[in-house]
Image (cartoon, rainbow, N blue to C red; front, side):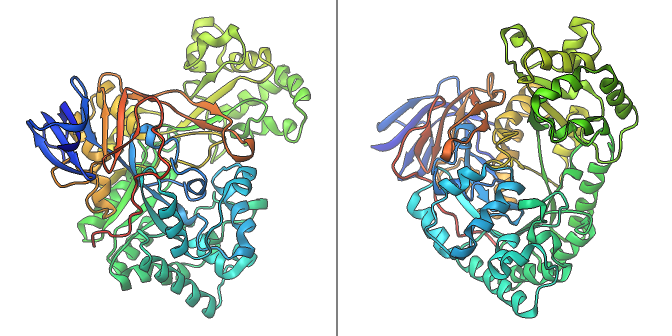
Length: 562
């Protein structure tokens, strides 16, 4: 008798082969048979009319803190993810000497847009070293399989303390201590090493995150540890200093898979060819035998905001008067024809680095504050303006004013054109992931990237077949990160599975939940068309809610292919 039997599913193996209608038997967390299964099972699931695929592999998450108080790693399991990599960009919480805990959390709260009170209230500090952190995660029992990066900013802070954000030059002794901590993390099972040179990565009080001021010499000294170990991957949030050429040279010297994460690699209507230039440089590096890849987002980069806090618009000079202004005074400014004229002039002559360039198809109403405008939820300002026959800029401000500035908008400023994004998704140098799950919770939730991909890029646009789309979400990212045995639905593999309806699969609009420690709120998305998620043969989500387990079935991953 089998532990679990899923009957009559359309089975996709995650490797791009055509689907088959089959039964799938699971025993002791492994897939033991795919085909016609005549034996019974302790639990039988009827999957008639549904598809079964390997669970989604998310290579870019930031659950490092949340996992210590929430072993479900919500909302990722609900959104089909069964394997997640944390510690990206070199931001995390281990190793961390006890006297630097608040420093670490304050920096994390800013750079990854997290609620500081939730972090201070929620993080369970049962560790100081990286190895102790891994042990604590094992004891917690995560709901998804979890791999952890050794992080540059974390390690620099652990060694240099507060000076990590001010002293660009580490002493030889400090650098050697950092190298030792990277090596210790690799010995404890880290998936690799992560860093950031991005100038957009600022910490608490506006100070730079530690890695962003480090020298290239320091970066190379730390990545060399991967070459010495002959294992692990390197990912970096790149800035101008970490160009594709620099990243290729690191891949060449370490002979380890190297990954670029940058908003410059996303489609942007202001510089429409720039993203593809990054991909082509990575492909050329691969042709030279240097394993360099782009981490690729398949969905618009979304920013949730209201006109009480129009942070995405503050770079326009017209908004200078409202900075540090009380909300009651903002009403007068937004209603002023002079303000609106100044904003129109800004949009006609945008400065470099501006997020919003005046395309009102890139801003939509996510949640209305009154019944009068509920019908417009999910519609763009451009669409609403056309229906009302009013100028889009005026519609934007007038609706917000009528709702007391409580209207919740969503701005989609990067990856906002299917025609521009599709070539990036199909490029051989790209790896589809980049959810940032667990981070920027005040403004966004991209944890559902996989379900969005299946709904939009497979079903709605037809840019990918279902078999190929599933491969790009499962075995392909697992193989690129050398995550052994995951991302496949074959006999002998771990039973990480997602059961869904391809006709309805997708994600909800952004929803606000006040469920963080200390009463903090976050943005999440709900799944559509999901009928079950299993990790190592244990159901963790039934498509509607989590299946509660005292200890989750996810493995802490420490063994990787070389």
